[in-house]
Length: 497
Image 1 (cartoon, rainbow, N blue to C red):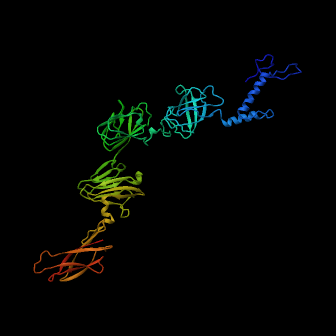
Image 2: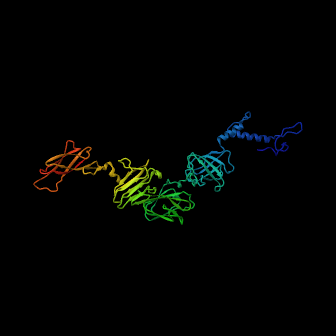
Image 3: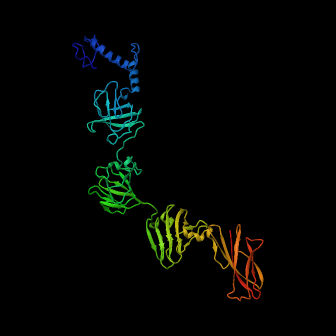
C-alpha cells in the first residue's frame, strides 16, 4: 500500500495529501476511487481474517482484529500435516520466503524416528538440527508435542534449529566447562552394555557403553580420538586378559601415569577411558575384590601418615613394633578412613593413636592404646570425634565372647556360650573342701572332672579324688580327697554356660 503517486493531477504535496486553501487559491488533493477502495479493502480484509464482521459504524475493529490475530499467533503456529520425520505445516498468511531468525511453531502429529525435515507452506524441506547443530537422532519430537524451530541459513545449506520440543529430548553441544550440560556419551552412567569375545575395532557407537571382554588374548582397539568430543568415554570390564590399544599412533595415559599406545587389562580389572580429542586417558580404575592403596612394612616404631589411609601397614620381625595412627585433627581425616594392620611379627604390636585420638573395640570403652597379638590382624576405621573403631581377629582377646582370666584359678569364655573353669585345691586326709568357681555359670552347670596331684602312689594306697556339685551348682562344688594317709592337691575343671 502506498499513496496514489501514479494518478495524474492527484495533487500530492511532498508525496502526501493536502487540504484546499481558499486564501492562497490552492486546490486540495484528490482521493481517487481506486485508491480509496484499495485501502478500504485492505482494512476490511484484516477485519475478516480475524473472524469479525466489518461494521462501518465501529471505528475500533481494525485494532481489535490485530490484537486477536496476535493472541491467536496464527501467523506463526500451525498443525503438522506431514509424516513422521518429515514435518509440514501451513501458516496464514502463507510464507513466501525464509529469513534468518524466523521462528515457527507447529503441533507434531508423530514423533521423529531419526533425522527429520520441515517444510512450511510447501517450501523446500530443510533439515531440522538440534542445539549442537547435528541431525536429530530420534525422540527429540513426540506425537502431539509443540515444536519451536528457528531458521538459520548458515547451517549446511540452511536448517531449522530445534529451539524447544515439549516432551522430547533436547540435543546439547559437548560439554567443555564445569557448568556445561553434558552429552550421554560424556557421562559415567553408561549407555548400555556390549560384549567382545574376539579382537574388536571399536567405533563411536561404543561411547558411553560398558564393554565386557569375556575371552583371553583379545585386542580391543579404541575409536580414533580425533574428532570425538572431549570427555567422551568407554568403560571396559575384563573377564579375560586383553590388550587395550589406541587407534593408529594415538596414546593412552595409564592409571599409573605411563603413556603408551597400549595397556594390558587383567582378569577382574575395570577401567574407564576418557578422550581428550587427541588420545585417551584412564579416568578410573578398579580391581574386583578388596584392594589396598599402599603396602607399608614396619620394623620398630613408625608414625602414621595420610598415605597409609586405605592401605595395609604390617609389622614383622622379632622386635617390639609400634605404630601411631595418623592424627585425625591434624590431617582432617574423614569418617570411614581405614588402616589395616596385620602383625606378622613374633611379638605383640602396640597401636597408639596420635594426639587426643582414641581407639575402641566393640566390647570396651575408648582407650589410648591397643595391642595387636602376633598372628592377628585389625582394621582401624575412623568414625569421627577422634575415635577409631577396631575390628578383625585382634579384637577377639578383648571381646566379651572371648573374655578370660588366665590365673591359676581362671576361666575362658567361648563364642558358643561355653565357659571352661579351672583351679586346684589342697584337701586333707579323707576330707572334702567346697570351692567357689572364679565366675558363676550364668544358666547351667554341665559337668566337671578332677585329677590327682600325687606324682606317685602305691597300689595298696588306692587314692581317689572326686568333685560333686552342691545345692548351688552354678557357683560351687565339693572336692573330695579319698587318700587315707596324706593330704592331696586336687586339680579340677568345670564346664557350664
